[in-house]
Length: 121
Image (cartoon, rainbow, N blue to C red):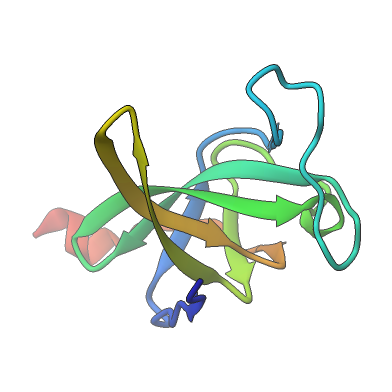
């Protein structure tokens, strides 16, 4: 499956939307998903990508050791080594498709500060 490195503009900002949620390999949630290389448990974090005049919610999977202390909703972060993997499957005759996002880690970033001049305009 193709993994595509996601290039980010310097102006791209990310804000955490949810606390990390454990990722499971089965619907019964009995087996945690783990990273194939490090064997670390995997977590999913919903973040808001803000770029230009748009915002989009993304779910990004990260190994446990890539989650910094202080990660909480509203925190400004920057994903490290962000990749996108397109996927598709047919289930009960219906096509489902999407993009899975994966990062090596999150770095805490400087808080988002609105430009006072832009807000007055």
